[in-house]
Length: 453
Image (tube, rainbow, N blue to C red; front, side):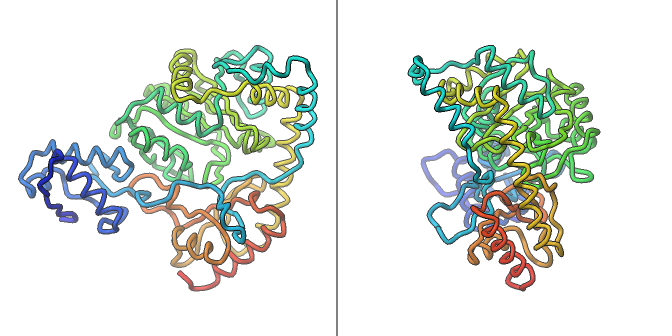
């Protein structure tokens, strides 16, 4: 058998002791990612205990994100079981060029400053420092709906709930609409934020089979039938980490299958405003099945830590309760400032600026890494570098860090049992200057040509 645990006599229930031993063996490296565990009945016979005890132990580790199982395929050590899901800048290493975290390019926010100054001059400015509520005013909602329409979704008639950032919106949606033990489909490589939120809430993520780099109908139907998924998390525009743009055919297919199977779609539109000519959101095809998230931090300003949940009417009260119970309601001051930025058209001007600067930076990427496969459009603030030779995402991330460049390997984004493609995400907008970006890319190019695996 691939794993032969020993039952140690403790005061803990046997299933907890087995789960703890399994977790320890995974974290110590005795059980490597992708390892298939023995069948539950075989393991139960080996330990001379009930199968239900093994099932409870496996379920405990699955809810922690350590295991992945599919009916008919068995149980495997998740490929991201040891991956670090924290993708935040390394502020304590000043010599490190940040090419890992998705930080928009540092631009002048004079437009926002001018709006703030006008707000401060108003006699009732102090009212914005009280407690907020869970709804927006009519003019604020109109401002948000107009911005979301620019991203491909006409959401004027839908309930809208503000939240403190896209990550928090995801946590509230998972907490409000799902329960521990539920399964949600995702891309095989997906945003680490949804992984960490699901792990915290005991929700299992299931990778949906891809064809031509996007969710295929057969894979989605298989997951509905065999994995009993209740929902589907997607990022159609500039998918994180691959920067893939979902086709119209795939969007309409997902909407149709969701209607037929009763799936809840969580559509993350965090990067959609970067699209100069946006496609229709999946929510536009299936508005009653889709909870849509619009966010400002990546496309407008990082300081506007705001997101908006556009929800079908039947989920409005549940999600409002989740936001309240998780203390994710928005400050009136920030909500007012963001609303005025959107209403004044400054938001789209800033989004256009981010797009233009991304194009300029991606010219540098295309030039220096022209000999390698770098996926993603020039308007994207990140790219997906496919690694040659014997590199893995993890090994290249480590060597690049030692050379003074932070990138994030594919293992951080992997879902399920399958070994991810050898690749790293390059956050091209994160370096402070184009010169820093160029230096980091020259370092990466030199490493790719070396044999330091």
